[in-house]
Image (cartoon, rainbow, N blue to C red; front, top):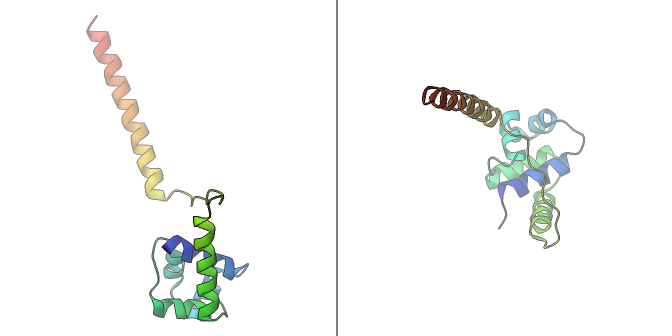
Amino acid sequence: MITAADVGRAMERLRGDRTQREVARRAGIHRTTWSSYESGSRLPSRRSQEKIANGLGRTLDDLDRAILQECERRLAPDAPEPERPPPSEDLHRLYYLLDQLRDVVGRLLLRASDTGR
């Protein structure tokens, strides 16, 4: 099964050294939308895939082949672990809050053990 991440990796590979802004403008897609497709967080519709192919200066068949190659790489038995995208800011915030909570609980436990002596 093809995933949004397969589409995103294919888009990134076909984009090469061009910026997202450049190819998104050529495709008539907002840069943030392009970014969400390329990051694998959204799956573009078939119509959007046509625009993406045009923005990349490729045919829809070229894009389809690249997506299929990414899917095959992912499903290959000896495929290396795919690179994980960097954590989002929300995840960073969650880790920060968990650290803060851990500190508070630790202090409360210390206080409780001191008063129990």
